[in-house]
Amino acid sequence: MTHTETGDAHASGHADWKLGDPPIVHHMDSHTAYDAARLGMWLFLATEVLLFGGLFAAYLFYHWMYFAEFHHASKELNWQLGTLNTAVLLFSSYLAVMAVDAIKQGKNDRAYRFLISTIGCGFIFLIIKAFEYHHKFELGLFPGLSTFNSVEHQHEFKMFFGLYFCMTALHALHVILGMGLLLWGTLKVRSGSLSARYYTPVEVGALYWHLVDLIWIYLFPLLYLVG
Amino acid sequence: MSHSHNPSSTSAPAYHSHSALYTKVFLALMILTAITVGVSRLDFGTWNIVVAMVIASIKAMLVAVIFMHLSHEDKTTWVYAAFPLILMAILIGMLFLDNPLRINPDGNWEYPLNNASKNPAHAQASK
Image (cartoon, rainbow over all chains, first blue to last red; front, side):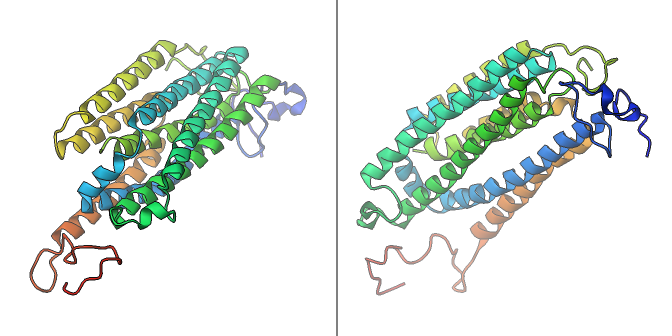
């Protein structure tokens, strides 16, 4: 097999490889590897959309079926905190794309600061979410707790909260996973293994983080703004 | 194309920052969020959720096309990105084509469900 494509160290052996160059992948050149990584991440994001999509379909159906009760149940949620969390995630998406922008210019320090800030926003989101959950537990608004056995909290009310906890908890899990992925990219930026010549880990990490934001963009109005 | 798709090439043109565009899109996203919240505080009945979903979709498009660089991607990637949306449209579309049109054997619309209370604590004699 001969590799004759642009700029690869492979054709002349690995001696030319320096830190910041794309890793040498023996079955394709680095340009193809970059394209493949992005396409692979988009494919994975498509599966994630369908994962949440099933829950969204369930939510939309039961919202239609129990319209008034869902509106009543939604009033228990704090829309101000929901709005704040939306702002936090939108800002974090902005920080993530600015990090990609920075590393594409080879500005490692700038990229590093943007990435750390993005992860920080993730923490803020989780803290606000934990505060909200704690408030629900205190009120007994969790499937299985006694509040749901009382007469005024019918099945429909439970349905809303079952969906609320499933969807936001699955989303929060993805926030944590996204932060992990971003941290991986951050460490690589810091160690100098990323550069304007090779930045794929940051780019695919940012793509995953944007998905987390996209899911919340739909979760927020459906859960918080129907009250 | 002002930015390099070939990170290993030393002969590719230098990448020009798009930071101004990202800042503008972020501000647009914040304004759209404010509008969503503002509209939700008023009562437009069923239209509330329609407006909310339309604005959410505009925000999603902005994030996907600009932040996620779909605008720079090739057709294959666009197909990968659009495909789950088509599947979701089928899923939700069929759910809402099926259920609202259900007629039970008595010839009555199946919804709302005939038993008045779904709470087992309220035992029902009639259905």
